[in-house]
Amino acid sequence: MMSPPRSGGGSVLPLANRIVRLGGAGAGAVLLVLCAVVTQAVQSPPGRPAAAPEPASKRTRPARPPRGAKPATTTAKTAPLVRTVRTAVLRQRSAIARREFGGRAPAAPTVLLSRADAAKGWAFGSSVLAPPAGVDAPPDASLFIARHVKTGWQVSVTGAPAFAAFARSAPSDVVPDGERALLAKYGKAAVSGAATGLELPLGPGRPWTMRPAGDPRAIAFAGGDGRVLAPGPGRLYRLCSRSSGHAMLLLIHPNGLASTFSRLSAPTAVKDGGAVRAGAYLGTTGRGLPCSPGQAAGPASVVFGLLSGGRPAALNGVRIGGWTLQVAASGRAVAATRSGVRVRQGDPLPILGGGAAPTPAPSPSPASPSASPPPAAT
Image 1 (cartoon, helix red, strand yellow):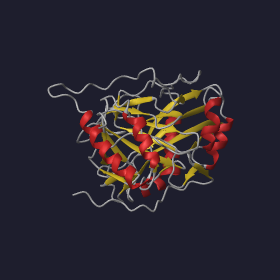
Image 2: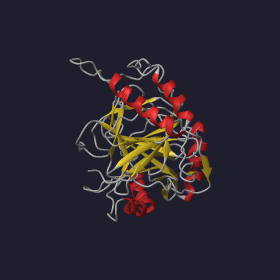
Image 3: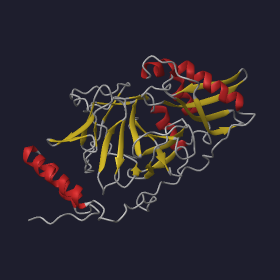
Image 4: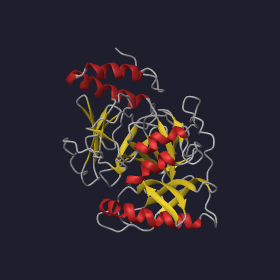
């Protein structure tokens, strides 16, 4: 008889990966048994409290940010820029946000200035249109690049035709060379089909669970060891705030797809535009609502989303970490399938790996998979 796996999961993952590669119903049945064994083996011993989330280890330590990428702060001199950015974001993104928010108009955006060169007249940062109170929808996140001319500031936001041109023209202390091509591509490129080339943003070991986020473009993960990891390589940007609890993280991947993370506590110290590798530490699960002082009910979690063409993409049918996500149109029921195994919300979700490289598409087109959504939660 096979011995139970060790609680750290070190011997489980290679075995699980070999089972999944076998395919077929037999592999699905064995994987179900393995899931049950993992769940039983990784529970904390009776009377012993669960270990607190570990800080980033050497294996998951973020890469060093590029030189010259110094955070900028809003001052009396930059206040006109911030006002102009707010106006530009509302003009260029409010129609998109209104559709995402069920027809409700967004409030004034939150603007975070990341880098600025006053002498050359260029600036770079992020903006967020938060959903109105009572609307379960991901915030509308975007980046902006601004340049100063005789008539004042000109601002281009993610998805606007001038954004790529601004990214190519900005000085290197505002848009470093390592970010230039990625930002020029971001907002235009998307992925074709359901493949993302990404892993689940979760650390192996103790099992995680999926939870509805109230929107088909977001899903919450809770449990595990609490550590949220980068699902793939990319460049990291902060949204809303640099403080812990209510900030969001935006990770732009080389294919133009981006992933978002909210409710994080103890976020990584990587600066805006810093390169991170797959598996790098991003933060720990929390309850803080993004761009808001409120707290979410329920257990600590991370809310995960994808941006395709700079816009939130529906997650139903998307493949990530070898699992195909199933998210109801209401956003109130979630599940995942792999090799005939179906994991429902609240059930242990094994972290097995197995993302596949996606194919870039020429224009933004959020995934519209054919997989049927799960039944409504009871």
